[in-house]
Image (cartoon, rainbow, N blue to C red):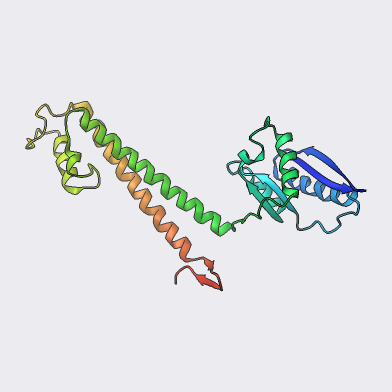
Length: 235
């Protein structure tokens, strides 16, 4: 983590920089280093720096350790806003963020509680399995189309029970005639592959439903702030 601190001393601004490793102890040490700079290098000194305001980039989830250890009132911004028109480096980005933040351009960032973070992770997992199920469904349909089978014109090959039932007849080991379907049928190797794809799709749908249920249960167990009060999620 590259840190830049700008302080006012005798009507002049001075910048102090330091780099710290991103393990927990060093990130905590970084916070104390910032407080020490504010106390010893600023004139007048900033003695009450317990509730720090600071600005940092959102870097996937790597900024989370800073938010957890520094607390305070952070501003978290898109890395592209750090200086898209200049050469990017950690040192330059830290310095520019510090300069811009002194102008008050960045609003304070909402730091979610552990409960809200857990709900977000559960919802992300639900979205993940929804996406995987959709991809499996698309692969099944694409494979059928390669062999001239256009059943998807009548509905989804996975979600529509009637269409899926027809496909499963085509995938059976015993030859079953299906009206108005390409007579060449499917090679045995493709039948096996599609049976496996359907099994994969079904598993993803089970996982999708599971994480939707967990997300709803989590949301119902939380207290949610409204404009005037807090409401129980089960209301």
